[in-house]
Image (tube, rainbow, N blue to C red; front, side):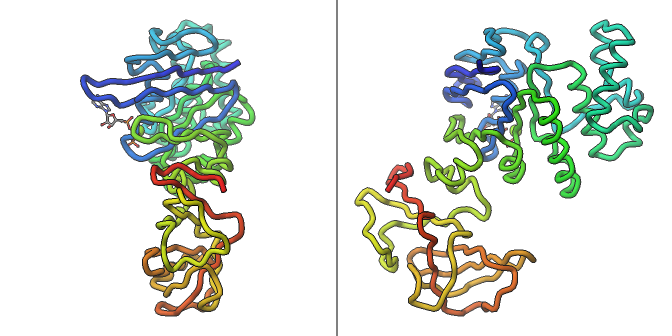
Length: 342
Ligand SMILES: Nc1ncnc2c1ncn2[C@@H]1O[C@H](COP(=O)(O)OP(=O)(O)OP(=O)(O)O)[C@@H](O)[C@H]1O
Ligand SMILES: [Mg+2]
């Protein structure tokens, strides 16, 4: 039983089609992440599921009921935004209980729900404070708490952590992972952050210009990207891609005739003496990051390739090197960008 199902969903703004026929089946309890470049339709799709945007065509099924025409309040979903508008004059407890109070839930039930949400989110010591006396991360937790009390069928998050600094993001990422473990609710989460997507998702939905480019577990997308777009979108630094017919390439076996693009991730290349690997190059730039050093090598007609090496390196710009590709880690794509199995 799928908890949320999108059937050929489309969104048109006048003549402009923004969501171009999306089919997606989300299981109960799944953590689904939408990623994709800015403007590809992530927020629009999430808002259509929430009922905040009308669906132009297709169907949205929530808990086996057609919810396409239902208003947001009747869908049983909770949405957490990047800007968590809390009521400044209300305490944390009042902010969290507000929607229940408005719905006429008796005070004892309301208090029990707020206490339970505060326990899950570790907000118990802060229940009497006002939002202005909280840190950004604490405010974001209150915003999540406000949605938990309503026992939603699913949580929808639109870049909930993007206003937080790097350290707080890491902390909140952990909190959200724990929250999903304890609530076991369906979650749909939009992010720009590779690490959030890879670490939190059961499945990642990669969107490209209003279409689903590929859906899969983080590992499936990383190991077997179905096309060039996903190959270069998932993984950081991104996959190196160059023409399959690059004359300097020395491969042990010939490539299939329909191979147009050759891909190899920076972490699947090791550097050796000139002539030892599959392609030679010259070190152009070294990017030292502590644990790793990214080596950018100029490889003639293959262009600039990135190699992920150890932090400690004795390489220097201008040095001649050879790049060896790890067995079984190369990717091939046809002219249209579709992955080839070989
Ligand atoms: N009211 C509107 N009228 C016309 N076009 C719109 C409207 N709202 C959004 N769009 C367009 O729809 C497309 C998708 O927008 P959306 O906000 O879903 O993108 P996104 O993937 O969430 O991007 P970002 O990562 O920048 O948040 C964009 O091209 C945007 O300009
Ligand atoms: Mg958006």
